[in-house]
Length: 354
Image (cartoon, rainbow, N blue to C red; front, side, top):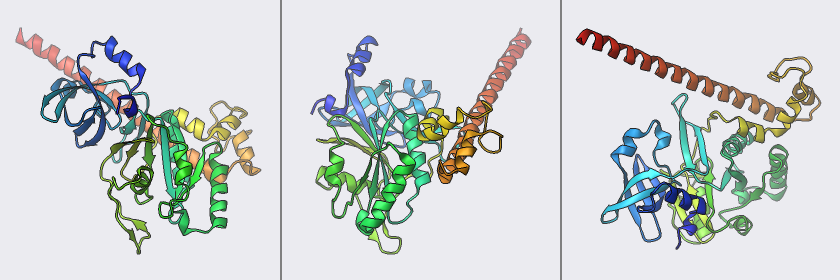
């Protein structure tokens, strides 16, 4: 195995040399769980620990290593390394941190393609797929939609489902497959390339871990049997993990119940490009597309030229984006005001001292 097989690039190597880091080793974070890291290079897999300087200089959680990151390392004990710094990220898929207003959670970094998995048999949800597309588009990561458990519906139902999905997502490729019969697995393999990184996204129970096992041809990810009561596999992935295969680098993720939107204007624009193109024809440049006169979006909606559910989903995510941006701005103002208060306190203290 070479570093290129792990996704290493010439740009990363040039950066390492330009910044005098070539005396250190290099590795990729393949697993992270509560600031415990596993780092892989061509020789081994190591337990990774970040150095104090990296920990204390971090301004946010985003400055810490994440699965997919390339890190500069030095070995200090058997199978253990110190992580000195994180190399620049090519891409970073993020969502709004659950339960933490105005904060982001990194799902994975240095991703080339995202595999968005959606099961056809239970909670098939077009709005959720558009959310996944938005966070992928915001990260400049190419998405691919995979419909799983197709053995549980008949061909006419599947054809109708694919047609409805393609009408909403347009240019994004859609691959129906069954982990049970393995129909569609070979089609998916044609999209995979050695050395490229693919992040699997989807709710719990859609078959992400099973798909990885089928792509590799062996049991490497833990899975459980289908529950007869809820008609899905019990969730077994508890943390993000990167797996290197001959067909590419796969990142498995725990199922996500929430896909909150952050400050992702480009992501929304790309996902809802039809609405964005129409908005250029609106009378008012700041049109909200809700009740204004001469709104091209509302006009198209009334004539059935754009899908109403997609339009409503767009408005909802636009509100989420604006709320996230407002929350971030408020936090920055509070931090700035607090900083001023601390400086003023120190000045008064120094005056009183003398």
